[in-house]
Image (cartoon, rainbow, N blue to C red; front, top):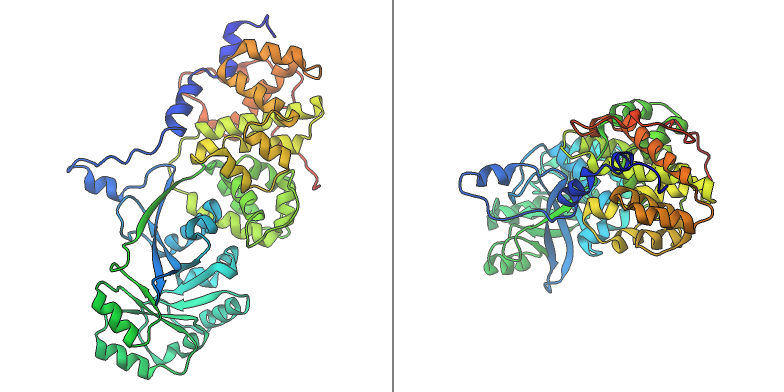
Length: 475
């Protein structure tokens, strides 16, 4: 490879990419105090690639944390704004992206749920043993809703009635409820006493919310409440998490394919593989408490088969509806796709499994996308020990192609040449696979091409299958 001209090497390395990656994916989100003129605008605007949320602890009589209410936030302002249905879906998606255990420290998670959300299949993506579904006060207790809640209870989910005001038509929901939340600001002592006297016999735990003073806490205890929530204990704590940019070009095609039964995995797998964000969700869900399957995953197809059609439909629908409209730079996605495709194409030539190499190449940029240590990411993915360790930098044989593609990205030709000389299974023609990966990524994500640069498709391609259509078999 030493005789190849520098211009071709720079074209392959995509020289500006390193600077863009460092600037766009490895520096922390700046949260400096905004100016007075821009404060309101910044507080209400979404930050590209960042999800905001808040959590507020729910305490027992001894002051110990019993659970957390997870609250949707559309920006830096610590208050709700937006659409309730979108908020419910996004918060459910957040649990898949970031893990419920990480969000609540193993305590119960209380979710605000709209009627449409409860009537859908989306609640079943959440782990039943650690989830409390809060029925919002705006929900009408229709026969369909009551039946949906009854089914959720039978499946192990707990229900809470939020900001509850007694009306006779809510009697079936009271019978199903595990928690009844009473707003101490909205009701005075006489109204609360009347409400409890009107309630039919129930087994629900009474939760006093919007407690703001020590006297209100004592009064709540005298009235029989055993759980407490409010500013007196803690204001909602803001949390921000970096997301993996999604490939929205595939979303509409995928939504169409999700309508078919059974799912056509030959068509769906390439779309999932071309969307780093969705692939990450699939791997996280397979390894989550809700769907944990004690089996190593070596391909996206294997993960989809393990999840099953119904679960994947729910996951993909939730991810797409949460991501549409969000603005993210596709550059890091393009880089992940190039790595994944290169490792996949070159893998069989050096005795490595192509499917597993695809996953390794793609997952190698999860830490940069999420700004989370590689060790944390690796432990959350259901991959082989050698692949997890390779993600963390271990010099396993499985990592050899990933190391080579990193050198190519950096334009470190001396190390590329040394690596090819030291690995008998490598060949100077291995660079052709990198060209093929670049060309494939631009078909999958054409908007990622930087203005003023030559199309990768103008580069010669020999010996590399550049077709994005790949037929895979479940392992």
